[in-house]
Length: 170
Image (cartoon, rainbow, N blue to C red; front, top):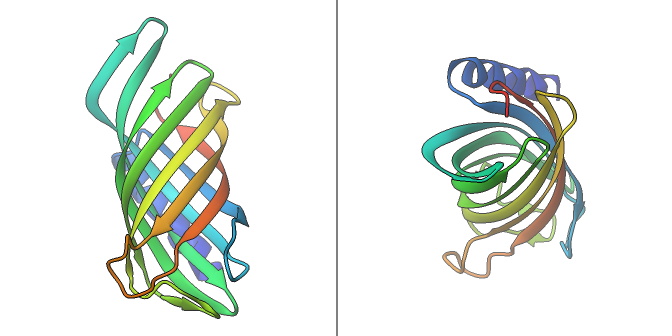
């Protein structure tokens, strides 16, 4: 577990200082209707893309999110990485986002829960509150599924809590 946190810290430091608009960590606090008791931990980097629309005091911002972490259940631990675009409605104190993307799993079987393949799709929605000018706390719902690409693959719904740091002031 020490190696995982070390790799996550290195990942966020390298990506965050070079390219990121926001970096953070998140962990699953609940899975919904899963056949096993899952834990998930990840570091994430959010990059603001150039497409933005101003709407009065708020803006709609296009973003790209990259995550790296682990998924754990039934004594099995596997790497989990995601990549995908999202749209965020951003004010000075609140951000709401929705996104889609792809996920890669290092392990596909966790006890009786079988994803049936390492490639997955994700859909997610999140809310983030500004605690200070740069530090944030938030919650996220993520659905992960193979969209019937693999034979009888099971999906996973996670509820995650996160903390993040903005390099750019909102």
